[in-house]
Length: 145
Image (cartoon, rainbow, N blue to C red; front, side, top):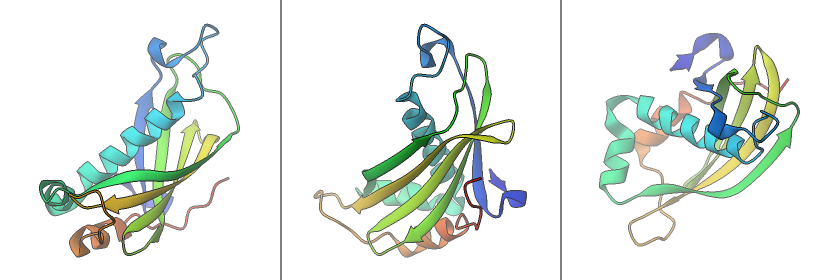
């Protein structure tokens, strides 16, 4: 869903389950990457008019090229988290996104993710114009707190 008060960021809720935690009941650090991936999948699913589905049907897909993560706090078993996702840059065959995992309005993890768009042959491909236009909806101005 798009969250207008958050300046165009897409917000996905994630519940912390037992399988997400370590023996102390704290979210294992690598699982934040899974939460971010789920949020990006939900963002793509929410894009109107089936733009992402048409991209997949054409044999195109996004792959993570780079990820920078800052861990600021810990989530625990049964916490309800929000993953705020927004586009930072949209280029010809790639994009950069910011994703922030929050609990109760407090930033726990911030990520900058660079994605490359690949065609069916595994080579860089331009992001389709309709998908690019839909992604621009999520180019909010929210900054990490």
